[in-house]
Image (cartoon, rainbow over all chains, first blue to last red; front, side):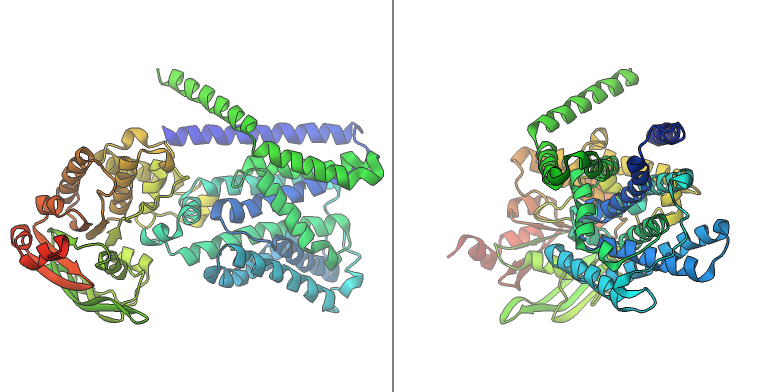
Length: 324
Length: 252
């Protein structure tokens, strides 16, 4: 009975995704979007991937990571090096780039998994922060990545013209992570967050599963990096600093820790907001900060709790009626 | 045949000798009590048996298998499950999911199935649901299966912890003060449940209890600890009439 309900949920999410896709596609093709909005469509997608993958670490596994941008940068640089050096036709180069970017990031996720096994909470947060800065410095230093001048001449595979593909990749990643949460592996991640001592006593090798969560999240962040690199065409190490990691973390927190839908909405709002506020020129960042604070306050307010309670109650009534 | 053999078990924290030269032999299928005044080292013994602490000396054998140096998850796999004095549930997860975490190592499908909900995913998840509900039913928790664990009343949280422990299919179940914080009615009911669990799951039980009267009601054999050392052992009747035990509990 329960399984059936979940497949129904899946159908709903697929339907939402399809409607969204058609809507955006109509907006693009109909010329309803300004150039400015066109330029933000692909960032929307990779930010959603970043937020959803970080949500797996912060919201579900319960470990604070401040270096998520580093995984994205690995994916971006490794794939960009591949596509600029080998100059294969796009239909071969892009899938390979996605795989290479994802795998390189996942490998790094495995390495960062080692301190993760030993550290907790604030300590881990600081280690991941340092890790992010180290990666940035390495890209700044290596000749092959162009140093601080950056890596340029990356083929543009993921511009808004290719929106359909980028959207599909994003949707698949979101669904995979949603699936993961409702599985034996996802349950174990949540169990570790809720009580790692009890999880271990229940036979869960906590270290293995923490590493696994980091590797999976890093893999998807790496893919987001590939989309980023082949959208902007030039990579600079400075783009992937802790500001970016914090911005993604803000999306996850704003979205309500561990809620995939919330992370997506927050990622969309926080990506669009700076663009929408452009007309305020000098006051833009000030307004951005104010909106952010207001959203956080709302997120924690009794008003929202009441709204949620109301929704839950109506849901319960509905399920009771269905039961009859 | 003994299921658990503890020989010369001891542990020091710096200069403090928390447990010293403890010997226990627990027979398969028995219900044994471990009692003693506050600070006697009862929970420390549990923590050594489950790999949370590594004993400074002595040996632990479960069904002949050496457990010294094993990690808690390996000991769980070897067949010891436990509950905690201060309840440790996966509080944000549902009651059903708490038990399903206990089944994690018994009903398996690969990560691929988790990501794509493909392959044996649906079949194994259904199997898990059924098995978990079956265990929850023993504790009268099946009607609360969709509730968040944190929202259960206290007594039911204690029961859920036992249910989760049983999901790991243990040979030996360690209960750390299962009746703590319960009123006399709840306690009596819990004691019945514990006896039922032993019969239904064929599991050996070692339980820590504070209240001697309680323990003597259901345990066949009792070990008494005081200041980390064994003070007495025997049947409830023998132990209750032991002058040293009475002194330890009531003072001179």
